[in-house]
Length: 355
Image (cartoon, rainbow, N blue to C red; front, side):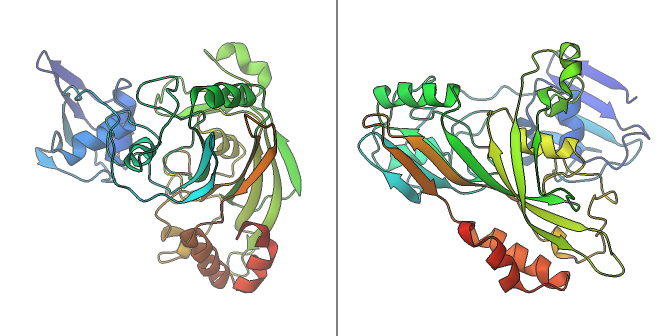
């Protein structure tokens, strides 16, 4: 265990233990200060308020044993939603709702210190009238989509539509389909995951999934159901025979935090590019770790909300909206296919409905 000292001035100092050597700086600090979100830790790093050996460092810096980590715990300014001129791709719009193709890296609403560049701000920037929402920071927002995840997200323009859609999500009447690339070769054609999900008891920035029989052991654990089917497998030949990746179509029946990411990580098939739930360096499920492989070129999580289906809140008409796979994900698949000796056209043929 590392030693920790703190002062009334909200400063803390940690000494990295041998057991924690090699861990990323941002994850190391977030785990030791559960009151800080990972985003807030990154803000402190970017602002020069988190130092290693008295010097600024990068978020992904790998710590060494005995190094001193100094943290300046400053309060965050009050957050608010405000209009920003940010382009948005609108997939569907009528008088009550709209569906936006959210890019990866965009936060849905202000929170955890992130006030600018949000989807809400972008909607306000286009003069969009939105429902009052459940909170002042999230007008119009009726469901979640992780910052790292791209794809279709539904927005309510008025309070009546918001109430109807919120009830539809509560009763699981909205259909949500994702495309995910996971580590390793999934051997079955389709399946269902019904592990309950709760906050990790020690690593507070993470969620965890366990079998239902362990439900009482986890505080505030909630049922979660994820259905999936294989779209394509990307297997390697020599010298990596038997290793590779699997492209999945995933349907959510519940909307728990990080549900897809934590469910597949629990099965030993984490989503490609996921630094929070992915395997440790050198222990990738795919087994493909030589320097320069396309696996390391993806700068986001390979998770995309590809289809969203719902009843129009006023007319009751069933609406289906598709968000094409982003170009960076398609290009990554092509590079990966080439690395594994497959034709890009073959992969496109298997996932044509999502292009």
